[in-house]
Length: 494
Image (tube, rainbow, N blue to C red):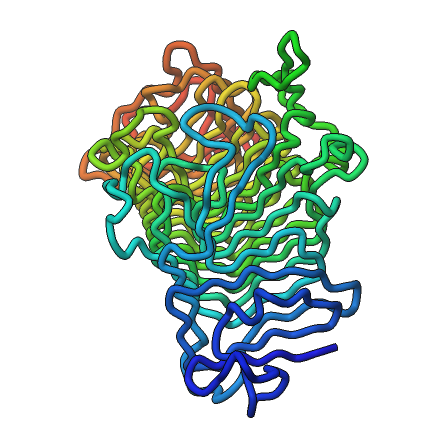
């Protein structure tokens, strides 16, 4: 086990770097190493590494992780990596990964890259990756702007990447591509590619087990805040189509929306926990888990997500001009609890989503004990036909706009035991696309308006049943729902 020290203030790359008295001066000295189990890379507090990057080679072992962190005066600022567009590497999923405009290959600038690094723990760093000039000849919102990441964690050629811990990082001002969702583009991205050797695609599946992202602050990133689990193996999970030559053709069959546990355990991410993070001013979505089996997302806060998802910024294409705050994609039994989502932006400026929460093409998504306020597109969306077995319960929502419950073509949303305080501009249902099915029961709906609110309880095309809800300050209630106090009175006098 070796502890390497790096100081921008009194180090030298001619030094051995193995003591605080004789540290390296630059991150390039670390990038030249292949780290072994138990090795540590410690950056001196107060150091600033501008125009530099840290791309780790090697892996730890169970019980002997590689540790990347800080040393020195605990009162000094965290050591800071300001990549400023440096640290360029070529990302390639080696398979289609979904619709336009999302690229599956290209050059990426990453401040901290963990590529096929298992058993690694990273903490107590400041990380930025600003666009410091326009020397590429592009505007910041051009479609072809290079993707950038604060931290990218990649599984590719080493099979299952195990035990990745990212904690107490301050990641901010990552000026990536406004549009790209699934490249390593944003604050923290955890993604899996297919291996370079086609013969190893099914024998050494690139995936993750045991990922914990905890206690980080992520601010002003493009496009994502924190995204965990996107994978080239979606072609196996989602029954990707093939052309006449046998190549993947970027078409998918989601079946009835249900997802087999064993399928995700083989090709997706397992033992994923995202907790206690603050994400502010994400260009797109704040926190998303994707292709994960039973991920836990708890005690996170999102503020002002979807900052750039608007028609005067997201201008190069209209495709996927959507973003919500905290949500899953194609996960099985994802649990979201004790999270807060505030002021998700731009549903009134071209963002097709804008909700706090979104059960999206998953199986068994549960939201419970969460709080939302001021989200421009509503409280919760149950997104389309392939989001199944979704449950939204014991949550509180205050003045989310447009509508509390958004059920576009959804088959079976279950919404119960929540409190919705609706402003004058919101309805219990998001009425512009309420053409799905939902069971709505034991909720409290409060119309916070000067006059009783008129609404449409059963929009054309919807299949919504209401039972045992409380309605405050509405002109009327759904005809099939007997107010609780009246039902109780009848039972006592029968």
